[in-house]
Length: 69
Length: 464
Image 1: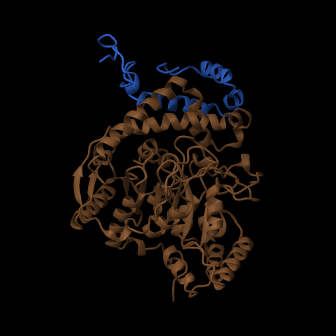
Image 2 (image 1 turned 60 degrees about the vertical axis):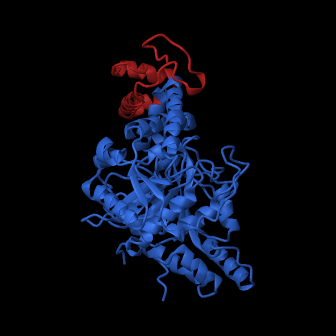
Image 3 (image 1 turned 90 degrees about the horizontal axis):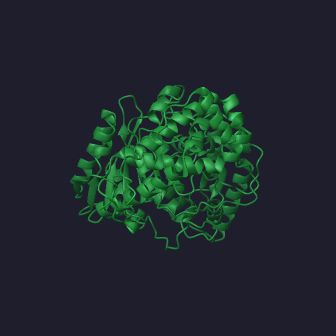
């Protein structure tokens, strides 16, 4: 889901159904849509810095441009 | 004659100990004030006058027999209504739990009971400690005593409003992204988010397991230190509770700041977010005052505020959705709209988003610890502006994220908000003081030095 474009109304309803949120989608669709947009903003805010190799306890040698050191 | 509405907890405690103030008369005076003023403030969801008077009488009798328990004995207090008190509903200000009934005290409620405090009632909150000031719930939202058309901050809104209005001298709040410190900022109070693990959360409705804290709210720094001393300590019922000795937090607050090293995270409120000019100037004036008192001030640069905030939001939304998933699926219509919008984002976050946020969190903790190596405390903004109107949902949405409190939930370190004056419109201004993990004592020391040199704690809203 991360990085996807804004889904259509139909897609968001399908996604909500997969998550078991049919009632929220049926009765509070606008809240659901705003929540989806909000979640995308949250993830985007985490930034670019979490490269695969960049775990302090497990630093490993990856190729150039793959977060290796 | 002592003004019982605004007497400090510390002073009332001293008077009660010397039998110059009757806990019963004190409780009656506050109950009368609540009856007169709270219909305009909505600070309380549930008042328990019979219980309060019974506890006040018990305290008075025990003290008369020489059984003084400590500085909270005979002192009225309130609990945010996500904290269990045996036999009473813990509603979380929500339809969903309106019929609930607590089977036992939360650990913090039990500690206050053992300390001989006088329980006055449950205070309003934003729904489940995450919604905003909502008008589509069974109870109205609390209002700001400094101007009733304005928001008192949240989510510990009723605790904040009750303290500012002189309805209580002490209350507990909870803080996941700033919810003790926000009402402290908005209502000219002192609010402490202690170190993670310092105060038990057992018996408190969770919002985000790794970000939730219980904290003391008062009108003065000394009162806050006293109240933290009562509620702090290891609790086997909370697996995140830490086994560390509880200091007398009030013992060293009068030592002043001469020689203390204070870092300023100025970029949080001048670059990452631009604070309202009056808020920013009040912080700069406070720093100049602390420098004049002998503190050494230098600027500190951390990661941008937005990175800390995003880390907090992803963790909070993920963990909050896990708490509320069943109700959001089965009873979404029983939440206020604003609460639904704040809880539902967690449905759309992936496990990897959560893990990335926790990885980022570890890095931010490392960054903070490095910055604190040669510093005693940090100073930064709490809120970026004074409280907005309570009936303006757009302003509420805009100002909700404009704060610098969430970083310290991510970091788990102690952070305290205190008043720095008032805007031209008469609304509270504030700043935040942050310490090393488990060093609440130094935070209180700096806050007390500032408070002692300024007149803000003796300024109260005109409600009578």
